[in-house]
Image (cartoon, rainbow, N blue to C red; front, top):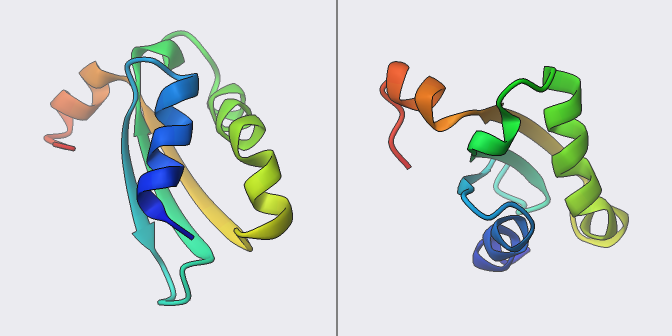
Length: 84
């Protein structure tokens, strides 16, 4: 799995997204995703994660075995001191 390609895919669907991809197992098919975007403002966590899963649906069929998703707004990231 090409992490730059995955980042570009998410950013092409969510304009202001900042994306961090982490290989959780060393196999590059179990991934941790941190996606920061103001598009998540006012949405329930399940809605935020569904947005990401919809973007990844084709990759999940072939290249990604498991994904751990964390989503937040830019304000939430700043409050938590998260820099991407």
